Image (tube, rainbow, N blue to C red; front, side, top):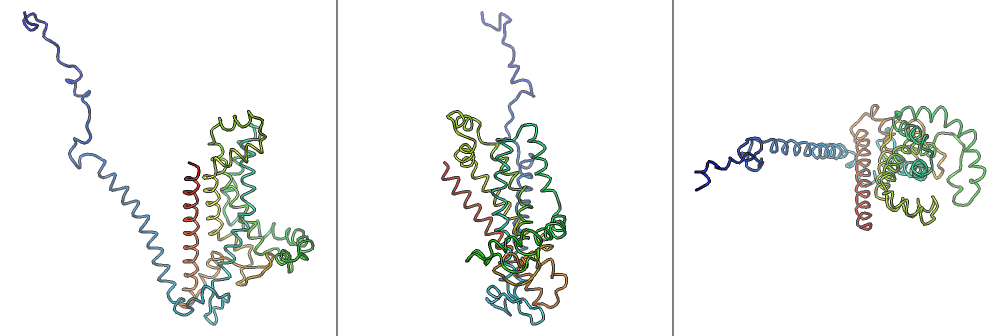
Length: 336
């Protein structure tokens, strides 16, 4: 007797018979019925818009810089003079001011930011970590014009009356190094602008450093402490080497902010198109020059000179980011 004759025919496959339980094969769907195609095209258009905007800005800057390039030639890049009356323009003073103030800011901010991040992660009592971290992050939220006003009305007078006279008296007579601390203590100048920039980029670098140090696997930290290492040794030999890629990224983020900062620097740098050996004397930066003179610029060559400064700042920022990317890649390969 067969199974069917005995009334024991097998029940249909419940799983295969139920429409909801059928396996879904996305590749079997007709093209255009799914969301994958439109989503892919939409995200591609968004990415192309970024590239198009970048290319458009570069083209506008290059075209705008042509008149001053025709008039000044390569002399625009090596001339310090800036005289709108005679239509003679040189980019040396603002470019030098931009690089020097950014360098001062990074020299001051990077060690301080790293120290703050290590303190918050390794040494700070737990009940104080959150308030201190919030306080650091609040510094990043303060508008740059507030930093500029504070620098002009509070910091510059204090520096002019106390710190700068002391620097001139102690470091000024020294050979070579003394040239950086010569002249009357105005309070405003390149060093003051670098100090303001250092305060402004400090929270950015600190936040990134704190996050990347917190990502270090606890087992590495505990193993180092277990063999008797001190906090200094753990920080120097374990935390910083393991998090160096993120730390470099944070430093580059702060450097990019320092290179392009405008309002705060404009308040305190003095806006003088001259290069002094002394850091205490007034100077200018590219962004400060653009903020001060673009609205008053008249004449094609004058506007073109300012546009050319914008092009130089664009190129400098691009080179810095490219260098940071290259450094991160090399660091990543070295750490593997």
